[in-house]
Length: 476
Image (cartoon, rainbow, N blue to C red; front, side, top):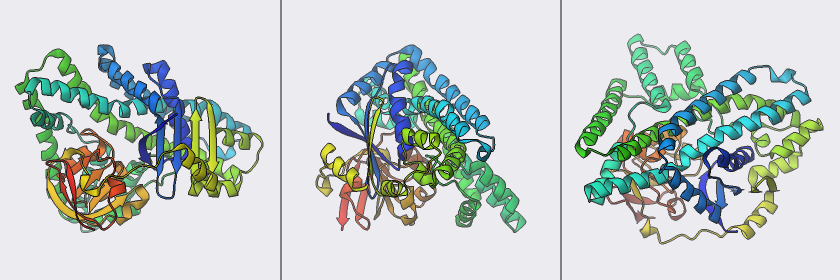
């Protein structure tokens, strides 16, 4: 078996298992699946691998789905409905005081409710995410057939994939800017309004349940850093209006056939739902924290540690009313290797994880630093100092004017993305988070650069040419 790296994320064992089971269960819902996965956490990041042969078949299946008219019409609507249903069910079930539950009751909630609901959630989550790249490839090919010019087709793809309405993170910013205007007129900060805002948007950083929600201090700091809220509000409104107008004018100009229009509509829905499903995931994780904090208390672990246990380990510990080994939990905080093939799972901790990973994985080869090339996510050309961001734990390093280099960005990266002069990511295409947010912010962005986080180092001075999709090292 050859392992192919799919993504790099801050990822816990519990979520990795959810992804794996969802990857298998996709077969029943969409006719595509991934059964074999490997997750390795080193001292900086966590990498998620899939079986190369399986992944090739999986991607081919996604391309086949894009030829299915019924799928194109129904997928996003049905997925959104299911994600919303799961969130509502989890909110209702976990609203009880879990500390009053017996071990048997807590175990039952975990086995018979949380695990199956999370699996069903990630079936849709994963498909929304994974179909984006094949989708943009198909749309670009279709556009190129129409305009006979790849460069123009790429420009049109950027227009058609631009955000048409404010997503959750942008809506939060709009409301915070309005609060800034209000507080400026009142001459003081109204803490009740800040607390209300915090309650509404505390979920944003929760890409996994062991991540920390926002507290009011975060939003107070954001308010302090706002200089001209009226101007920024106007820029946001003008940008969204421009995106809609530009898209409508382009569609009138192209006069597309019905099949191509269906693909373009699917693209618009995909851009929307990729953000929307993140919002639902974050709210879901805010609820799941309640269970895992109580489960961790019973097992003698922090929420960060209980997130590193397999499903089987949690079940066994709750069944036996037994605390989990602190030694193993602490080893996994440093390193773990999780290999899943179908329903079987092997997990290694600490040094054993590192040793086993060496045998399973081929080390990635870095090409010469002058060869960094990628896809233009947002045009422009700037120079700046590199800051490498592997996870949200590295965000504090980013200062105004830095070139942010990451495997991929997410919604909790947005506050520091506003400070960046440019964004470079290893992963992604023109509809990925980094590309769309960079276009909203009007900063240069190159995505799909593959090795940027390995080739570049903190403190490197680079030129980001997001007209050609090239990064040049000027000074190390």
